[in-house]
Length: 295
Ligand SMILES: NC(=O)c1ccc[n+]([C@@H]2O[C@H](COP(=O)([O-])OP(=O)(O)OC[C@H]3O[C@@H](n4cnc5c(N)ncnc54)[C@H](O)[C@@H]3O)[C@@H](O)[C@H]2O)c1
Image 1 (tube, rainbow, N blue to C red):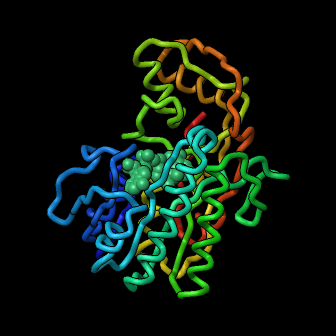
Image 2 (tube, rainbow, N blue to C red):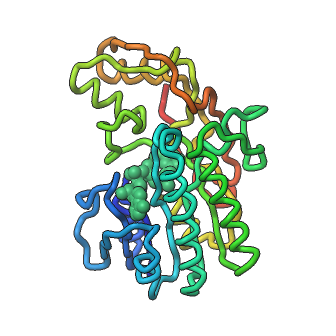
């Protein structure tokens, strides 16, 4: 297949590109390199990198030519930025997504798989969550992802564009940038451990998360995009195992062979307290059962 991956130079995108190339697909990446890096992508004869913005109509339409399926991952990914700059964040995460969906249907693309997020749940009324749990986002970022889901459903109903939204929980793995204060907590902790710095925890450390490997996320993306194309709607992408940050730190300390120093800072606005999910659709309909971190 000819696949377009928006945000393909990013963390999840580059692992998805690696897998698509290994499966023999032709891959075009559209990325503005705002948080991704060209170095995340190894040169490959079946890979083309186009530097461009998903809000740029001409760039998106040109990138769609000859494409069978789209993996749409490009986004403004930082929750605090969405709170401080909601207009900018919505321009990328809502209008950018509408631009991609519109160009895809006009180009006759057969399948769109796109990134949603566990952030759409906010603080749910009950745990564990399922895909039917109502959305109560705590940040513009979560709301933007929820709006994207509504647009995808509408494009499917209006134009027959087959869409599947992936609600990723906390993804970890190689190439996650540890330098941003907002990036994945595991990459930040590993960076601090390597540098001998204390680990910074926002709040009491008893918040829970479901940490899912980027390799399982890439498998879920590629399966939904190229194999299980009949699966539509939204899918929780997680392991089904939740841990507290303090449990995570204890496990990292055991791996490092020493007790790790922790520095607590006040909790951050827009952050979810507890995250717990039973990802039945991922297991049953995509056939992906990712391993949880052993604690
Ligand atoms: N990492 C996680 O735990 C997680 C959890 C839930 C959802 N997500 C979603 O998954 C997707 C990928 O996230 P990631 O963790 O790989 O982050 P990332 O920052 O590594 O990837 C995002 C990519 O999009 C590109 N991009 C940003 N704005 C763009 C624009 N206007 N035009 C073109 N490209 C643009 C960036 O340069 C980057 O390469 C995002 O949609 C994100 O919201 C990630």
